[in-house]
Length: 458
Picture 1 (tube, rainbow, N blue to C red):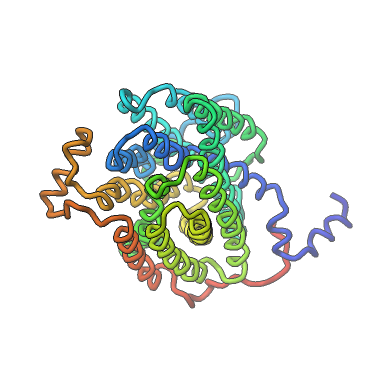
Picture 2: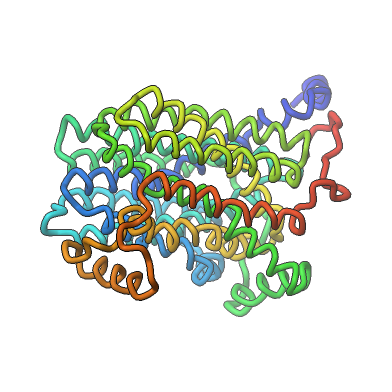
């Protein structure tokens, strides 16, 4: 770059310099790769199973196939310690895991829910495992790639691309399923995953940002020791509790959204065209807007503001649950919800990245993001029972009937809460995470508001 060009670059406003660089483009590519497998599990697969007559309780329990997201910190040190030959650090696993995902996604659609629910579950578990492992590498790559002052915007762009990836299985996949067999629709989804693997070969290399751990002990012990040293036991406990609770209500409210749309009378084509597109653009706007707002307000204040929006938009589902196949109401409710999701997730992911040590990011981010997945997996697995109750347990699969019996023993109401009562519960569960902000991200904490200068990032 010439001296004149470098001077011009240095004089650009901070927001322009932060957005228009190769690091942000890498966040787009990795966000797309990270989001597609999860959205396939939580959006495309539930509609497929519901249309094939699988019970709401069994579909809710299928959330348990996402358990690898909550345990990924256990094998994150292994992925940090060992590399695959032929490609740079991080890119090696990112490429290989996307190829594995493409293979399993292609396989899942060849089974029929009526007689192959076990095989479908096995494929879904493998998708969850490979996807969680991919997230380990992508999160660490992003933490090592981005300078400290770009964490907010970089993670916002990642979230934006992550949500954009949901359009592939959640919209295109569902539309295709209306015109071709489900097996072929899943094969198309596998093709997108394979294309992502090829694109990952062109993301910027990390260079010598961090070195690979030399021993397994260093891989497993050092990340946790560093957390305790920096935060103390009490501070770490508060952070972990916040990560579990901040998006609990929001995650539960959207856990069965696809099944809700079916129960309200919407077809798979309407869900693909209206609901998924209404989710896409507000989520994109929310993620990018969230990143820009964080450049002004900082991460702490953004968590307060975005968390409030996230809480209020849950009440839109209360309204939706009282209507029947009204496309306008569906578009308004889903649009508002995913605006809140985009804002809240942008600040939440930036907060987790900020709390890690870049040199130990793989395992530390795996731990924090795994805890963030706990509500989506464990709490979401009983959402079907919260809505429908346990009184029809005799018609459920063996696992669902066992869970229903356990809930009966705990005094759970057999009739369930219904959709409207369920969403009121979700709104109430969003409050504890907001209260923890007082300790983990004080609104007026010293240094929580970034300096507003025009210095170009390094």
